[in-house]
Length: 77
Image (cartoon, rainbow, N blue to C red; front, side, top):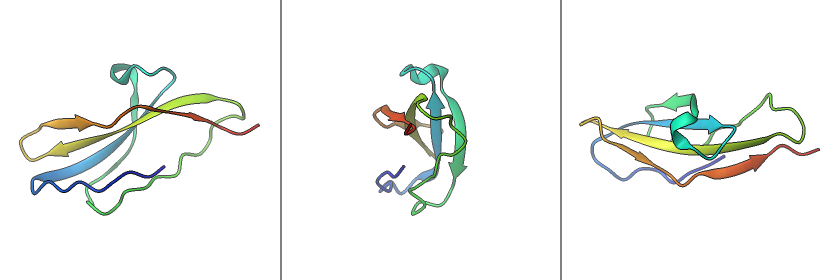
């Protein structure tokens, strides 16, 4: 998965979230990076035909969090 780089001067990190539903509050963090240009992550270890939902959360210096849209991902059969 890929996402656009943050343009905020107060950027701290990205967190990739994954869940079995599209409820962002029930998603688990599966990857975190504090490198602003590191805007991709490969998801692995998902059984064939499994549905998952993903979002990226941006954290800043003031502990504000901005969430991306939630996207569905289905592993191929």
